[in-house]
Image (tube, rainbow, N blue to C red; front, top):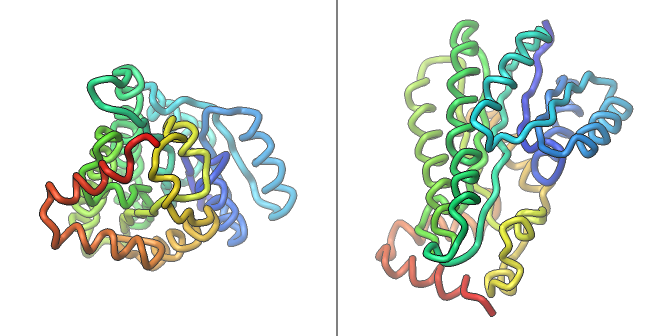
Length: 259
């Protein structure tokens, strides 16, 4: 049975760039995303270019039944998931007192609940064969509170701390968990987060999705627990360790305010 990489959010942005990296190494893929048309297009492109097998499953991972559906699909198709890439996620901009709870509930379900459940489902199989790698996409947002995106920043803090904890539990095993913490990246994230009018975008230095994916892929293959691409992003993470937390919160708020 050939190794397969399961990538959520695999039809665009960092997810599709990670898919290309796996494909270039001859690793079969299973891609999950909401947009079936984009999934099919990605499948066709990767199979034609790299001569690999790509399975696709259109699902909304903010729906609580979705992780079980993914797991059942991989079992029914005899896929050995050697690599689990929890990449799907979204943000939501605005004052918490004014934002839509339903959107925030969906964000929590996607960014936290589905990621956690998929990790548990596939980690069990990895432990049985004593091999596997997990890459959870967090964010530099994980290192500080985030006024005007309070729930999103909190979900990414969860992803970071969860990933580091599980990786520690797996010490001595042939399995690792890597938390990828990119800064602002050239994806559709900003549009979906409804933050086009935030001052943050005027000062953000957006990294290319391919560069972020390449950094995360290499860190995962080396078994690193934490991957922060870009010097300025490393500085951001470091500054959060030495400045008072209320100062950090005020800085984030001031650069995030509407124009």
